[in-house]
Image (cartoon, rainbow, N blue to C red; front, side):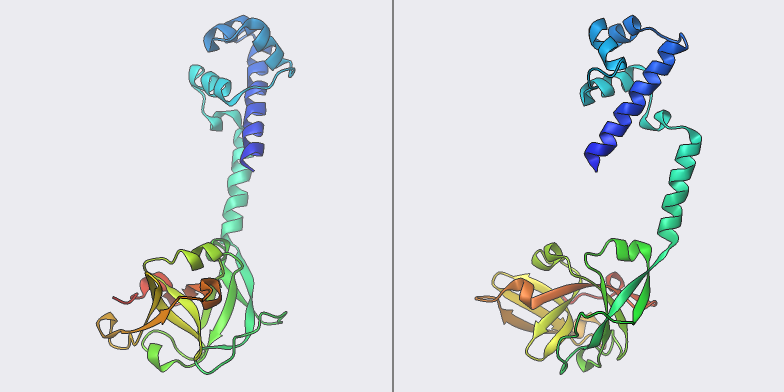
Length: 238
């Protein structure tokens, strides 16, 4: 994508130079002198017989006091900004996992489901393989989550390996898939629960990581909690 964008910008710059030469605003000789290249080189660039290097493009923009935005007309920029605004205003329908997520329940199944939940575009777009889960009752987290709450999950492997210092994750335990604030300490995973009366009363559980696959243990990061709760508004343990 970056290569294509750079090529498009260079193409627009060459077209702008051609326009200036055609209109008599400058000449090939003047452009060559301003940018420190030979006139034959500049001639070949304007004819499309030589590519405009990124270094030469930067030199031309600086010499002519142009920005990248100057290479696009107002109508094109307006259309682009309107497309972006419309995209970001959209809501995205995310499938809901089949079953409940919580203590005493098997892992919800990620199967084709007619049930979807509408998520704001900016939240869904930042998540990897976003999925929505419905929570079961969890007495240890009753101060934060309620039975039937819907949560948006990010399944990014990077975020599951390099755990955020503050954040809630879905952890696969013998008691079920639990939503917990977690932190890795050496070869142990610390799980925090019991936030009913605030973070000062949180309880810690430690899981040895020796011989365990971290990705099989940490299943997803909690991005969003219903419409009234967001994960980064919540306390994250000690």
